Amino acid sequence: MMLSDGYISLRNVRFHAFHGVLPQERQVGGDFLVTVRVGYPLERAMETDHVGDTLDYSALYALVEEEMAEPSKLLEHVAGRIVKAVTASFPEVTSVDLELTKLNPPMGADCDGAAVEVHFKNY
Image (cartoon, rainbow, N blue to C red; front, side):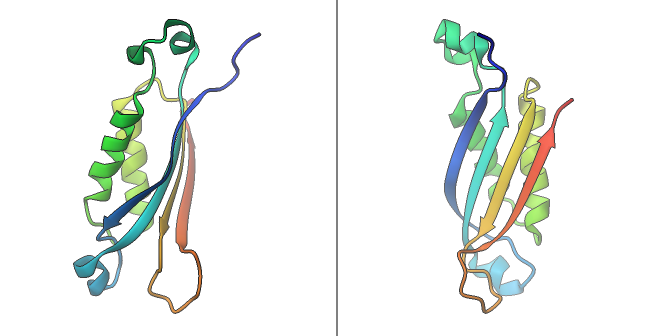
């Protein structure tokens, strides 16, 4: 049997950050959820049981945390920075799927949040 795809994921990681177009969003901040799924060759780690043969999810979290700490007006900008940081830090990455959700966005709607979702493939 042959492994066709493998992924390392962080699901619904909560951050308090200062992203937004409105001045109040940049001063008070808001709550955000990040879900990221990174395509990565996992075959070696499946055989060796060695963390050096996989993408360490704590290192992935540290990259996401660093980018979430840098204020931006647009969620698209934050998502792009996260994808760039992941692909620069882990050259073996084959894909990145990311969803960034602003909880309680200032638009007067009763909803679970407003989100940006991006999908990148590294060919």
